[in-house]
Amino acid sequence: KHFFEDITHYDSKFFITIKDLLVKPGFLTKEYLAGKRAKYLHPIRMYMFISFLYFLMAFSLNHKGHQVEEGLVQRATYEVEKHFSDSIKTMLITVKKDTVNGALKEAMLTDLLTKLKHESDYDQEHFNFTIIGTLDYRQLRSYDSLQKSLPESKREHTIKSWVYSRWLTTINHYGEGTVALLIDKTQHIIPKMMFILLPLFALFFKVFYSAKKFLYTDHAIFSIHFHSAVFLLFIFFWILNLIFPFLSLYTSIAQLILPCFYLAIALHSVYQQSIVMSVIKTIALVLLYSASILIGFLVVTLITLL
Image 1 (cartoon, rainbow, N blue to C red):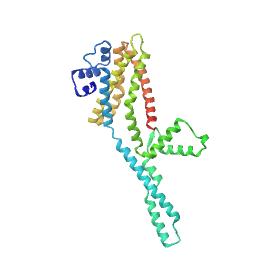
Image 2 (cartoon, rainbow, N blue to C red; image 1 turned 135 degrees about the vertical axis):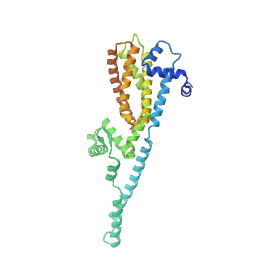
Image 3 (cartoon, rainbow, N blue to C red; image 1 turned 180 degrees about the horizontal axis):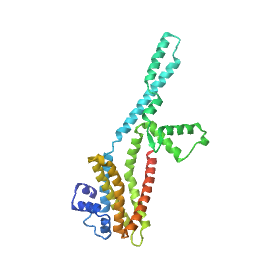
Image 4 (tube, rainbow, N blue to C red; image 1 turned 120 degrees about the horizontal axis):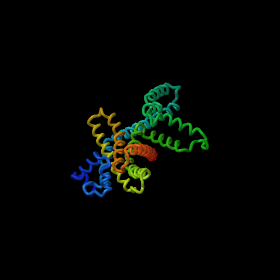
């Protein structure tokens, strides 16, 4: 009930909360910890509302579905053509070439066969893309062929071999739509991943700051406010990109730098340490959090391959 009220009723409490969240880093956390909560949205309700808008915009701007469908259509077309090609090859073997009708039939079948795409042609046209880093489809297929040529006892049974096998199976099924499919699945898991990263971020604060002065719940409130502010910044820059596409490079840089500046100012405001110490802890927190996000994305990628 409260969640939908926040969506449909933009009262003064909403605007005051958003303004102070963006303009005064750390201020809302200080007010909440001091017990001054009446004129502000509850942190969890605010986070739910802002993250709802953020991921709604992310999904609405994602147009990968048609690429997945095109990949399936292309693959189905290839399977049909391959079936006809194999049938023609079988007919060519059985045709009697020593008769006039047989020679004519052979010529017609050969001509028809040349008009159909062969597997190598299909691979060249639809699988010529990079999966990650320098890894492409041909390398996957080469690796898979090498593994199958080895005795079972000498084959690799590692995470790498499993991932490569799953990637190859997925690509063989979706063709060009594979990358779009993985991106689409990953985006839908990210909101769930954030519910793990958010409390983990608060746990990092517990390591960096005295347990006598601050409880874990205090750090959790700070984490919620910080993530809400970052989501709002991302929403702003996405809108800016839609209006002024030529600014995309600058907005991408800003999306990396501004959250770090915001975090340093907020730390200095809430935890009352020197600016130098706040900057040092900001760098450490950003590195820890970036590593956590990277691990999270690796896990998400593995999940999308299941």
